[in-house]
Image (tube, rainbow, N blue to C red):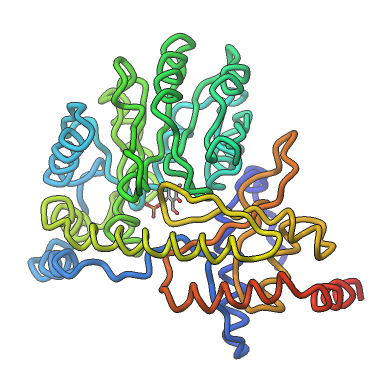
Length: 410
Ligand code: PLP
């Protein structure tokens, strides 16, 4: 049967990492040995005390629907956690719990952005921002995050993009796909601009507990900005709870009923026992999370060191998340590749290594002449060593690359 989807579906993007993951799964099924750096998911299991809390909740019959804004006990725990962590007072009526932090992106944009409104968002960036803006008929205004600025933006460039139609600015720090963090001075200026030009800020801080070497700054700490800010956070990354699907938004209380209504329409509520496990995650021991972050830091140092040993590759030390964004411009030139998509295909086909091209995180910015690939190091040390050995061999083998290019043309 030929299915003709509604017109709006042509405007809905997707999370591109899952497309490469599908190729990895297919190749593995065919018996290929693939080292995968493509998916941004902790390889650790959820800490035991959190798993136990989920099991207990099921055993106690907490398997019913809950309120669309989230269970009051979890909303209270989140508000207390944010108040302590950010030094900004939050109360439970400013929190909406969702099935994954991701929902907050679509909900916030659906609730606030009218057709034709402009939304400034990171490029390269997490693909769901662009998808959500397109879906609601908003106008996308990509903001370059430059390597020369530690993969953050230039605040003057951001200011030039603001127009009377700017409804929202989305920021992400530490960032996917680059691991870059936004400097406190730039956040301060952005907070002033938001007040002056009266726009919303959606701050995606899902990786804010995974930072190294540098202190993390949230835009929320600047005065007068909380009432125009939606904070996106969740449990997937820091508590290794991706599959539980649990996240939240913190926002002005007047916005809560709208966001909760969207949540109700889509999923009714996040799973009740998952929410109770989340409460334990916030209130219980943070030691397992600290250990995970220490392990990510060691892996980051390892992977950055190994990448910088490859001819034609340059990689800065990222300060957060679990991604490196390596500059492969030199390798592309050496091997006669058109762009980083060639690197992605070549690495998968000839080296059995899955990485993601920069093109999977938005179109190139004007003046962006370099090529990049993203590697997630939320994977074991052995895989990092083996994968980088294979990548080095392939990216330094001109004969293999020429042969691959010829095969490709056929
Ligand atoms: N925001 C960013 C930048 C992400 O990278 C992700 C997941 O990869 C999310 C939000 C959503 O995470 P979740 O829906 O698992 O909470």
